[in-house]
Length: 276
Length: 308
Image (cartoon, rainbow over all chains, first blue to last red; front, side):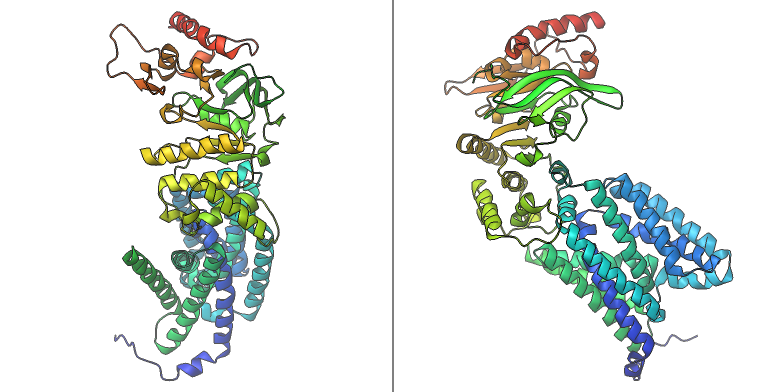
């Protein structure tokens, strides 16, 4: 067997195919949601909990295939369920690494179990774990777009109290911010972001798409709003760049997306530490 | 400072207040009134419920009995007029907020909906930063600031909304001497120039002594309030801290509370878990807190000895 890693001269034709248009649009929707919520996830020190949500969604996704339901539905329901439980336990709970890690491992195992119960779920397992941005349908994109509009509308209303409770929870509580409600709202929105981002890079690689661009933006930008915009842009460049490079070279888009995202972060981190 | 404040001009009034957590009484029978314009410390050893007291005053913890009145209203309902600086445990900050943005949240952080930051709000933030002496650090991120500067940002955030009462939980912990002095200086000016009532949770009184007018001490499972001359009593402090403490008056007039280098052999520091001692005896009514303080110490020793 030979490994071929050659440049594809017909890459422009690949890019103009209808499934590519869908992938670019999906990337736009995902980048917007991930960039904005990534900032809050880092400010709340809940990155591991957010990552775990994707894994909690895994048995939902494979279970949905088993029952003949849409993957996104099962994923979303499980992620939301997990989010509401973690949210109800409070912000401290989302910082408990051992409990989160244990639940994460168990959920992944459960996902594997459901997948083995049917051959169709088994076939889908790979794309749920590692993403398949090239198979995203027009219906899914409409769902993504609706979610983005809702996300921005809700955030416009709760932006300041959510930010206050994220960076100064005790003071926010004393000043009358409903920190419990903020925490549940944050986790519920996060479940939505996970649900729309998993089809792009899968449950295993989602950290690099939702958290890493926000971390890069945090290093470079000097205010929350600027960081959110920059995170969205970085996320978008990673996804679109990944799609273009995947059309040129025989590598899975998920791999290139995650690589670009990691590269941006590593460069920003390196430059920042050199400056000090 | 006088101790005979009437309920009328009192800022913080405890009436037979008690707090328990998980069925265990933290402290009880707290009855005293702290006057407006005072600077008080809440003192006591670890685990006596100092932070708990501040949370109860903010209405964040329910009372098991009695009542607490802050600024003339039940605990928790006057919080908009209270600046609160909680104890900061985190040394690393993941947010990219600048000092200025952090202080701004003290003004706008509770607002739902879309609001544009007004010029007046920006001016208010500048003023608060200037008062705490960190105006030049406005555009630096919190993660770039030292612990002492971060503490001053937190104080600026608390005072930006023009509170009448400022509450700080261990504001001097983990700060070097110069930073401690700077924070104490800010507190002194807030009290003198703006007339702000200040309450500080502290386990070391030394730095705060020049500005304190009184202290709430959690001696035996009961909070007591006393003016400063009554608190600075060697035997009381020795009992309070569970180790020998000396009060020294220097030629400059400063008083320092210093642990003595060697424990005298005939003195056995009387140490108990406060929840344990709280069960030994009961108090009735607020009484004269100063008189209380002097009379309490031997009484507790006798009680404690009897229970052993």
